[in-house]
Length: 212
Ligand code: B1M
Image 1 (cartoon, rainbow, N blue to C red):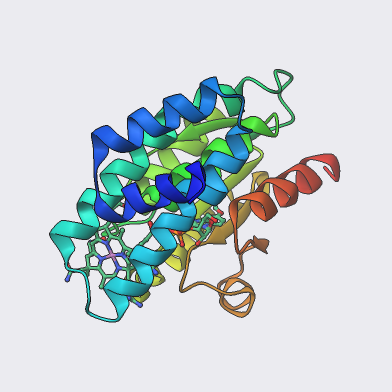
Image 2 (image 1 turned 180 degrees about the horizontal axis):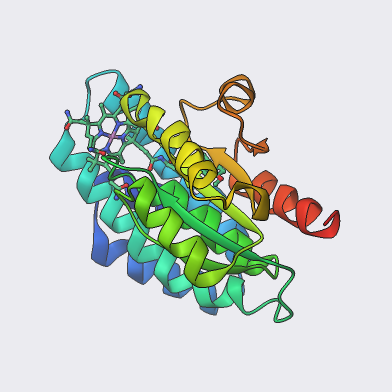
């Protein structure tokens, strides 16, 4: 089994120490950090997602897998983010109100930073007011919202509406993403864009900033 497969297995097992060791060893052997993320950490988390869905894994185990994935991401993050230094635009990103999922959002944030975007991450469970406050404070080009639950998708619409009410909507582009979200939903709530994954989200933001 390859080292990246071993890493994926450790994420599935939720073994934080082993994930850290394996990521460190892959980094020192010169493996591309993006490969470590895609073929090790995400590959493992994809299996976890499928098993959780099938009822073969439960919340505590999923949480351990999520923790181990995050500990691996923390180690590769500086290597990926260091690749580019010149800012190509500013993004305020967060997971919407009542939603605590942050792995995908963190990944998007990391890819955006590696693509040269300045990212202000306002965290999880971010109410519309928190997005508005961040827009006022940081004056970003783009607001990015993540949702993983069908029950929290309406918070994306609420946030766009509050940006409108506060007279800020015309100052920013809004993009959304997350497993239950689609282009169709983005269009229906008046978002400017949708991205199915971190790489597409980064490209989309760069295009939006360039078109300004
Ligand atoms: Co939750 N959970 N979870 N969970 N969880 C899902 C989302 C679920 C689909 C599992 C299932 O039942 N099959 C389901 C949602 C069902 C639904 O609404 N349709 C679910 C549920 C029900 C719940 C709870 C309600 C469970 C419970 O308590 N009974 C609860 C809710 C808590 C809350 O938020 N209030 C809950 C809790 C948890 C944990 C805490 C255990 C943990 C989260 C830990 C954490 O994030 N720190 C967790 C996890 C890990 C998952 C699964 C297994 C994996 C999610 C993940 O991290 N994927 C998930 C099942 C699944 O998705 N298959 C599930 C990996 C990540 C890299 O992908 O987040 O999709 P993803 O991000 C991608 C893209 O979506 C996109 O790019 C990313 C990278 O490519 N993307 C964007 C994401 N955000 C973007 C933003 C953009 C652009 C692209 O622009 C701004």
